[in-house]
Image (cartoon, rainbow, N blue to C red; front, side, top):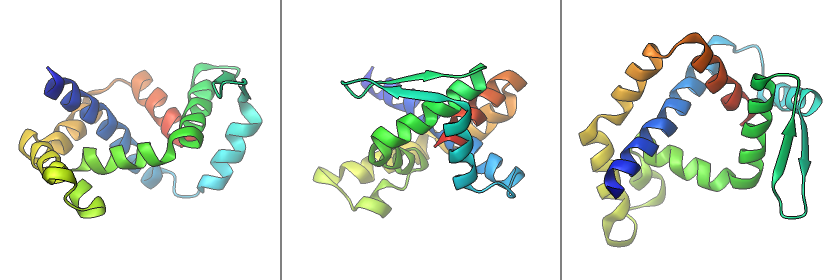
Length: 140
């Protein structure tokens, strides 16, 4: 069961990575600093005393951009580690790991075809889902 959850989580994460790559290629004129400024100006992010972001905006895509920004602000290292895992390149970036854990993870990602599946799923998604994923990725 844990492997199934790991695979599904990896697929979802890789879908976000693919969407980020496609969005970056489609709109190369926007740089990340302009997008971050847009998130700050459009979405209001209020951090409470426990470090939890409360995000307000005029529409769902704006709120999701703010959520992506808040996630990257709080969990950048974890997100980047998960991107490496989802791409099957954790051992390349971080070494083999304890008991070759990163090597085993990379082998699973490649064996299960996660990168190919995520590209197929991204192509099959409807416009609303695509817009929402792109909005989240724009905030990171």
